[in-house]
Amino acid sequence: MNELQIKDLHVEVEGKEILKGVSLDVSKGEVVALMGPNGAGKSSLGCALLGHPAYKVTAGQIILEGEDVTKLPTNERAKKGLFLSFQYPSEVPGVSMANFLRTAINSRRDKKNPIPVAEFIKQLKEIMKMLKMDESFMHRYLNEGFSGGEKKRAEILQMAMLKPGMAILDETDSGLDVDSLKVVAEGINKLMNPGMGILLITHYQRILNYIKPNKVYVMMNGKIVKSGGAELVHQIESQGYESIKAITQ
Image 1 (cartoon, rainbow, N blue to C red):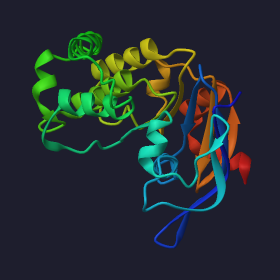
Image 2: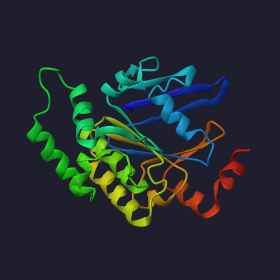
Image 3: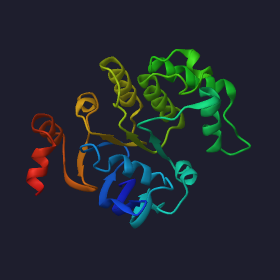
Image 4: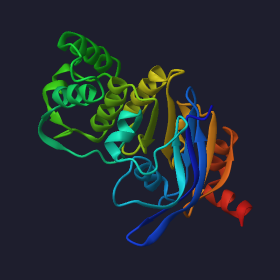
């Protein structure tokens, strides 16, 4: 079953059409890579999937586990298991990483059954260790003063703690040095399980050297122009996006 189905999605921002009939699907237990050059509409798709108010869906559907969530607000989509890691995570002064995560987890639980503090701290420390994050980060304000690599690890930490059914990772490799990229990719691979699907958005192939996609879609000018397997990644790496563009013209 395709747990996330995007059907002929058209999206506009300030009256300009950004997505022009995008269709793709992601099943749990698989990694789907969405590739394309800068400005192709990849990040816009991520924002539209989570219901960013600036991204107006004018046609098409977003189906999550058989339910049409196209018109649901962002918080309801999140409660149903959608997760988005941002290309440029925002700083949240005054809110510690630990408090932010515990509040987020409890928002998805019964109000009478919050996560026990000891259980929460144990999970948090285990995942931080896996991501090679110092425990002091749990007391720091969310993303404030974090390096680019630390922000991306913090995003994967959030994914690990929230355990979404469908994760959209937007340019997770952006701004990472080689060592940080390996740590983040290793974390994603360890967290991957049959109960979660991942839509991995990137315009570089380098993260796909460490995370092997089951399917690859290529987006250009707001449209999916080609789909296939890992061979597409190698084609783009060796010949660039112009090779895809030449075939589709």
